[in-house]
Image (cartoon, rainbow, N blue to C red):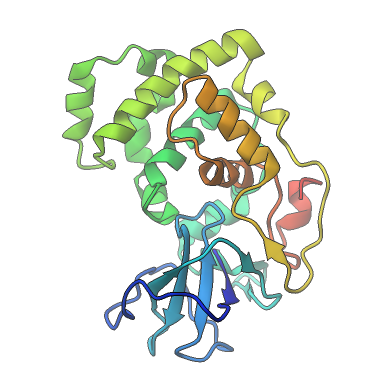
Length: 269
């Protein structure tokens, strides 16, 4: 998740949060004054596309809607291990490991790609850290995201999953996962594999992110993939969700300049 100072003219949708920070994984940057408005874009991390205002405790209250943001060049943190990182992973050990070992690294395993497509759908409206903390529960509940097994789920499985407190119990997202498993089998038959299919949308040019510059929450590739998957009958695959999927699976490299992982993730942006 990243910030830009908000432009004038946004219309407020609600008041500031005076309670605990609305996004616990957000750390207060010491160079940012309390009361400064920022636009937030999720980058696959569950923040959505919103604007917040820092409160006195470094929390953020969502008060404006927006579409784009500009990335400051100061949001690189140094961990206790001395490594420089994209600041959004904070200090939570699980999030740091996800940032270091997974986010932006190219994935070609169909099961893990399907899992991520499903979890991105479950993440909609929530933080990615919430889903990450439940990921092992999701794997247990959904047969480790085995496409053939999920495709054969019945109404009894929907009832079972709705009763599982370890996952996000949302009927629409559960039924979407079952539907998408069936569509994934069709995709494999027509394209050879999920990995082969998504590879056509990879961004193979490295763009250095040096200083403030526009960063979209979608891309032409994510819009095209979303449109094609919807045509094929997939659900919960909007352009923003697909861009988050691309970032996480290494189809685009949006690690910040100065982050130790960026160059390891290859030439995708």
